[in-house]
Image (tube, rainbow, N blue to C red; front, side, top):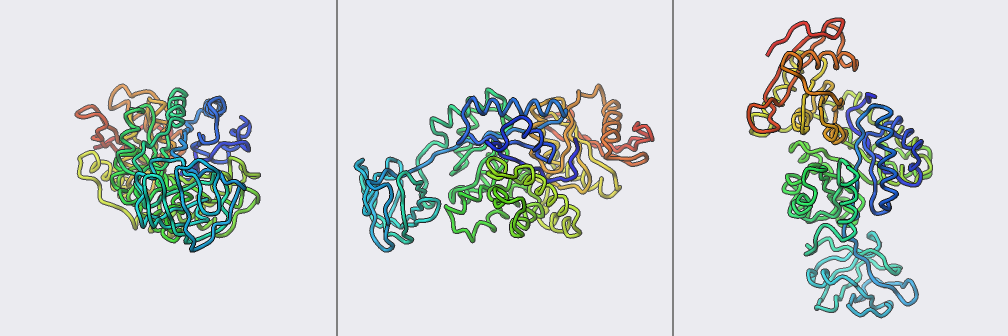
Length: 481
């Protein structure tokens, strides 16, 4: 099944979409990658979802990606004697190691790492940003904070520290068990929550190896401060705007989103825009105008994928939400200002021969007015290099490796087909012409550009370009360097 858009759609599975027939409807409506949220999924439940997605892919003979999203470290306060208290603005509120029930003046904080790392002047954010405090004093057993924004505070609410770099592993014990389970299933992407620095990604890479691609979720100010290093360490990036908007002033999030998108594109790493994209469609069959504009902005910026969370997981209109996102994306990509905006953030190719060849492929295809670019790839590297240039014509990724095809489901503009390795260069050209013709991406007498990494040097090298034109049967008419 070929999509009529270049941006990809990620949908979260949940109670509203867990049945095999629901997954089928979501795929037909436009989903390219399904997300399993390990915060809310049991191991048995995630296995059932995984098998249903793979069965759907087999029925449609289409590569569908699966993203397992790890919960990450969660910090919560203790319990109050009355269940909830009113914390007055401008008062002093204390967090301590005392496990007795809390009052309007204090509460237990069961996380020793926070006491170790917090400093006076740091901000504390509670209950998803509803309350804010500033630390005025600390000791090994108590933190005193001035209440900047007061309100009702209930037991076990979340607490975050946007200014504090915590000395913790990116994986909790739950995450390690969930990761082992997800890798055993064979997921294509693993989303790493609450990344603070590039070292967090390197640590998880040692556990994953090459079994799945790592998508770092940017939701901490420390990750924003080290953004280029985090992008370099990751296989993909997710702009997790919900938690990012809690940890940082919400007015900064749009600018940060654009910066993350631009830097990820420059690095050739897939970037996903997530959280509250069509939030009102949880309970309404139509989105707000502001939500439509939000989705459109991500598409105009050249994001690889746009994601639905609660809309498809627990919403009343999961299929309609996918259909709406699909329609918005198609409309934007046909808008006259789409390509000028897309190329306004074009960056120079990285200083390697492979990247130079991939950039040249896009330029040649545009100059000669070819119908498609066909990339042979084993690791996905060639496709990533070519799509980094955001070519204005279809990109077909041909790979003999199923895991590569599934990972590329997350990547902008690529239509991936699982196929065997060509026997030689001539066979490579004939196969590329036939597939491009049969997929309807080129017509008779139109040309294609073929690029591949052939084994002349290091693995993943992009080092070959050919141009061929097809006849009425899809066979090559001519071939040239």
